[in-house]
Length: 318
Length: 288
Image (cartoon, rainbow over all chains, first blue to last red; front, side, top):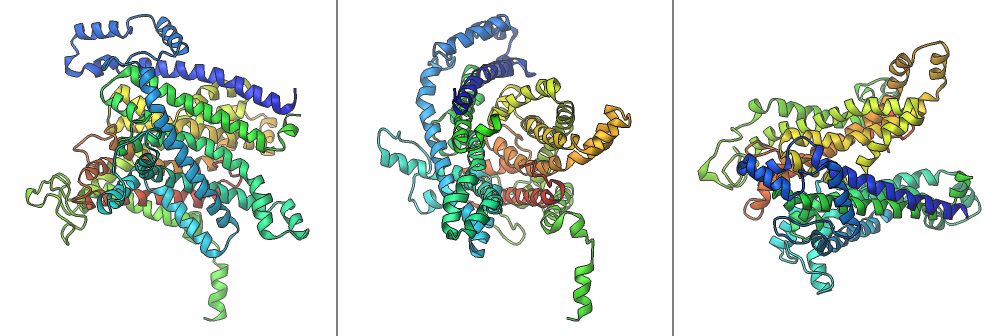
């Protein structure tokens, strides 16, 4: 088995215990954190009797171990349980909502990379004006809360100019053009801060790379600056960018919660917020697990990419 | 300009600015000090009561006596922003302080002893990092019910693993230094070595990271309040003001824009401090 295959195999195998630990964590979170979910759920209707009935219905009166294994068993069969308010299947609910969240986060990350990486390269090697623009963009992008940016975008592009709808959603499969109209503002909202991050990472990584001996060597060899920066340095500098993009994907999944609520997008994030407000614990538990699983899978993909890009991986392990 | 003044400028070794970690950090610290003072002195500084309702001026625009205008209930937005800094800064600084107090010993012990101890402490902590931060916060709040204090604890829970990791990496690097080995060889106890040699030298990156995180805490607090999971009305909080302002965005954009700017300025200040201190306190670049 080559070093690379072994790296991939180990990394994939490690995902299983992580996912299991995560399921246990999400399960215990709802049961062990101080505060009784059923009592919070029922509010003023929390008579001892009602509490007992609901606890029984939700299976909360059974031993923890048996609760966990029946929940876990369900997950393996693709059954995440029932939304006990609407009595819908949670699996079905999530199947409709995951694509929305994925579209939002993936499009935002793509846009952030498209803007952030070139600007980061310019910031590390370009002229003064480029550097200054990049600095201002970074500070603004990182400091402005995303949902506030979202409200300003709604104010300008939806309310004042009327170019784009303020809220709502049309599935991509139904009408791609309408979908684009509804997704533009949410994606811009989520991508701006992200682009600032990617820019910052790219700049730092490029600055460091451009000082390495191999760059001096290429320059001495007579290669043009442009070729050095874009062909050679950027490839070497891309490792930290990939890592940061992977980590930041989790931040985007978190940000999606707010952005989906703000723009009325029917994604997993909005589902979680609604479920929390309704004290709908099966839904909270299921969707939190699904988002966490998404994040773990994204981390896996990031690490695999890292392995592909890192020419030194073999040496490190040997 | 005479030669003497030029020379003076170069010679002057330690200005206050340099001591604070350079121009950037000094500017950040300046703004933050001002904001903390604003929060503390809000009752004195605010031109009006933050809760006083002026029914004749609902959603009225900015004027000389009310520079930030009125909100949907006819309350003075400027006065509310000043008071909101109390909740917002309190939660963000409190959360980072709590995370630092809890994360520091974990990171120090894991990094210093390594091996089994390291694994035992850091594996569960890594699990916390496997959840998107905001999601972790809102799932905690979903169980305990909303509130400022809950938001503080939730943000501290998010930051605990991040700070513990930074401290651990930093301690790992410091523990290999000769002076640490020297101390041990002299027969100094583990506790004493950690306290007087490792911790003081490993603290820098954590401080840098903490100041950047404090800025984000403000954004998280605002996001939580915006979702109705943080500070509860009528407490003025910047996130809550944004949530209310969003409802009247078209008629009275000032009710939304000024609290948003208030957050942005604070986050910029925390970031300036973090970036400025990085060069001074984190030469190895551990805080990322």
